[in-house]
Amino acid sequence: MTRAFRIGRVFGLDIELDYTWFIVFFIVAAAVFTGVLGRYLPGLPIAVRSLAAIATAILFFLSVLLHELSHSLVAIHAGLKISSITLFLFGGVSKMTDEPRSAAVEFRMAIAGPGMSVALAVIFLALSRLTRSGPAGEVLGTLFSWLGWMNGALAIFNLLPGFPLDGGRVLRAAIWGASQDLTHATRIASSIGQALGFMMMAFGVLRALSGEIGALWLAFIGWFLVQAAQSSYQQLLLRQALVGVPVSAIMTREVEWVPAEATLDQVVLDHVMRHNHPAFPVLEGDRLLGLLSLGDIRHVPRERWPWVTAREAVPPLRKEQTVSPDTDVWDCLLRITTDSGGRLLVTEAGALRGIISRTDIMHLIRRRMELGV
Image 1 (spheres, one colour):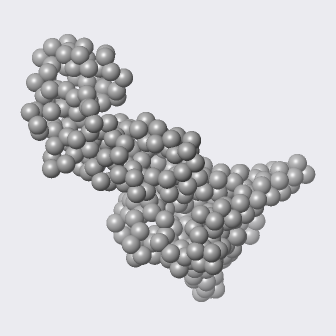
Image 2: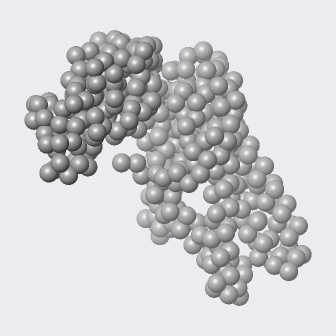
Image 3: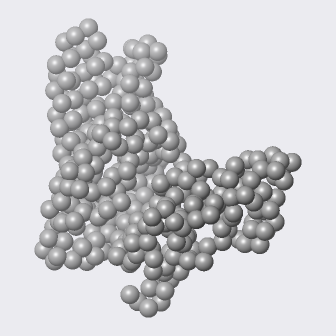
């Protein structure tokens, strides 16, 4: 089950909020309420302070979104696929299914985000100066100033040379360009990212033990950086192992399928109870109707199972549920991880040729690891 939900679409990209985003949104709003307005403008009414803090937190996260959009638009311009942008506990992330095709593309993508943050910092600091003379100038000037400095801090933090931070990606681009070896460059940048994360964790814990409880946030960010650096390198190795391998090489060709005219009682007795599969293709002659899951069967009241057929219960076949035999296994893995059924139907000219599941892909990965290839 996904923890993120879609809130809109910008430039063809889905914008999602992870549920953890609400935690950090509350923290940012509370920090503005107490640490900024409470410190510099303590005489403001509570209602005004509250609304101003919420509005400032929204503007800050719009800044984070613009930072990520900059990465994504440069990537799309370079021909890479970006499916969505998700805001979560530690900021934002663009979901990219491809690796950059060259060190130059990697560099342009990486530098775009901090460049946008620097531009926003300049804009907000300029607005801070321009608005201080108005009727609500002291409030707006203070908040714009905070937003300016925060965007500047965001740019500086992201330029730290630890992968997968933007600075780490700039470092990877430099090493990649010099060595012409993406794996070697990723390994070095990832190692530096992990070292940086461990240092942040140690510093945050030490400061927290000395009484600065807020420093634990730095330790959490360090922990996230360590995990992200490790997983990014592992994902690259996994991608290299699967790209170029066609689905036809590992798919299951003998598929357990359900005839369209079978009743749900027959489906359960003859298929569900005999085979440990979460879903079954439904065929009407040679025509593939769809993929019937256990959830689809459960949606039909039990007393109707003797009369309702698989044809009536199966949802219409969606394009996202099918792949061609020559599709890369890597592309299948990306799709399967976002599909609750955990399997894709392999079709050719509308006919069912096989099925590929997460288990099939895991077997391929295990074999390659055992052989060292």
